[in-house]
Structure formats: structure tokens, C-alpha cells
Image 1 (cartoon, rainbow, N blue to C red):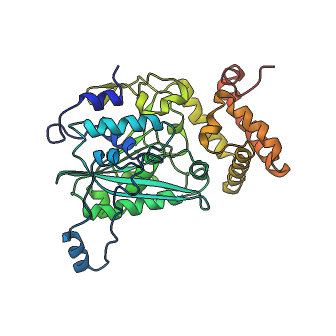
Image 2 (cartoon, rainbow, N blue to C red):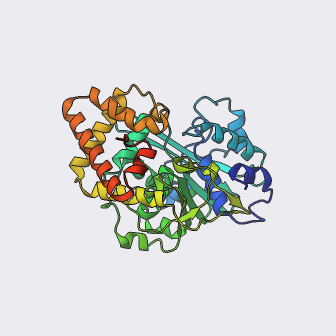
Image 3 (cartoon, one colour):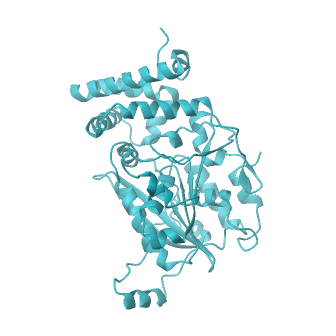
Length: 386
């Protein structure tokens, strides 16, 4: 069954000939993982006065680039980000050759990375002539700061990357065609939905579709049901049938499950999702494993208040540092044993943090045993067989 790269290498119709599809949105959510720093211009700062804003809009902006300019930029070190950087690299060369994507203008780009505040953010705006703009938000890179920011979403009503996403969408909107699409994968999908929910009414009314690909939800206090209602039917949540990341945190919008040729957490990569035509192949339903992840995570988080959750996050991050991991690929290198390695590393942190982490792990295991049974946990390497 074809996948994303097959689609890129075989779909030759332009956007004038075939409208934007969910697969196109997935392609651009992965293109957002290209670090365009030094290649694509930042959005200009808009003056506040009406006349000044009009003058700025009429003035010529920095020349847009295309995907070929990424390939010619000789900035490959650091250009391909995320856990599947090799697929992102292959994606770039397919985009450069594709009759459908090669003439897209890459207009605006922003990257913010701050280890002190645990902020990791990238966003890019793609424009097709005078027809539409697609604002795409990148997911998490492999930095420990970026993954700490993910964990912070469990107890913070808003993380810094979400604020930056709203600002980027509002800054870019006056500079691009009226039709707006927004999307992203993983944390990028979270940022896309946050930006569409939190932006001004004028910008939100221009957004035609928001695509969230296997994206986590929000802290339960971030949005209310009426906030989602303002977007109506514009949001499309797509997850693989074994979704893990897309089952975390709070989002009332029902996801569409699709098929993948991978299994378990490896299905998180969009490059494994099956495609027919310009759509993902639908699965009958989420797998039992995916539903269990959703229920276990929700129950566990409901047992802690904000302060308790923050202490657990601090303890987890301390254990990761104690493990000697330099980035998140080191954390994942142990496969199913990574969980056990984290437990072992917790013995090398301060006693108070070690106790907090041990209790948290015990609570998760107890909830999981209740919901899925001990045998399943043993098979996943999350509990020893005794």
C-alpha cells in the first residue's frame, strides 16, 4: 500500500488541478520539520496604525523561496529535525522534484529554541499563488528541552510554544492570501489547534481547515467546550490505529483512525501511514492498546493536582539527565527497556525526586494492571514477570 513518499513521487497534478487534501496537509506538516533558518525570512513586524499597516502590506516583502532553495542552501547540518530525520531529508528531495509542490512559495519561517525556558518552536508558511496559504507547525525535535516542553503540557494551561504559535498565525495572516489552512503533526498539531482556537476572530474566520496529525491534547483547564464550538467542523484529527501520542491529554474532538504498516509507537511516523488516492486508508477503529493508553493516562493525571504533576515531571527529567542521555534518541535507544532504564537512573537522583518518580511509576503500573492486565505489561517490558 502506498505511503507519503510514494504520494510525493507519483502525484503530479498541481493545486490548481486538485484541491488541498489531507495527504497534502500531512506532507506540509512534515515539511515544517525542515529548519529554514538562514534560508526563509521571518515574518515582518507589522505597524500598529491602519495606514502604516496598509503601507506595509503594499510594500514588497523579502523574496519567497522554494523547496529547491533548501536543497541548494548547503545547510544540511541541522536542517532535518525530529526523530525521523532521514525521512524528512528524503521528503525534501521529493518536494523539490514534485510538480505539485515544487512551486509552492515558502514565505515565512520562525524558530525559537531556549534551553532555560524549555521552548522549542518552528513554524513555516507556504503559499500557492493567490489561492491559499498553509501555516504549518513543526513537531518536537530530539532536544531534551523540546521533550521537557512536551511534559510541561501535562500541568501548564499554556506553554511558550503555544503562545508563539498563536502570534505566528496572527502575524502571517495579513500577509498571505485570504484562504488559510493550518496544520501540524505531533506537538505541531497541538500548536496548530491551539493557534486556531486562541487567535483573533478575524483570523479564525479565515481558517478553512485545521489538520491535527496524531497530536496530543491540552491541559484540561486550557479550553472550554464553547472554544471548540467556535471552530465548528473545521478541525480534522487523524491518528494511526495504534495511536499513543494522539491519545494523551484532553481533546473532545473525535479522531479518525487510519492504517499504518508499522506497529505500536512506530505508527506515530506519518511516513508509515497507508494512502489510497489522496486520502489515508481508514481503520475500523482505534486498537485496544490505543484506547488503553488514553484511559490509563487520563486516570493517572486525574489523581494529581498541578503541583504534584510538576514534581513528577521534574523527577522524570532529572532521571533522564542522570541516565547520561544527550538527546531524546538516547532515551529511546533502549526500545522496550527504556522504561526500565529510566527506573534504574532514578536511583541516581536525589532521594526526594527518586521517591516521587517511584511512586508515580507504581501508580501508572497499578492503573495499567487494572485496565489491561499484568500479562500485557510484561509483554511490553513495563513489568517483570514474577
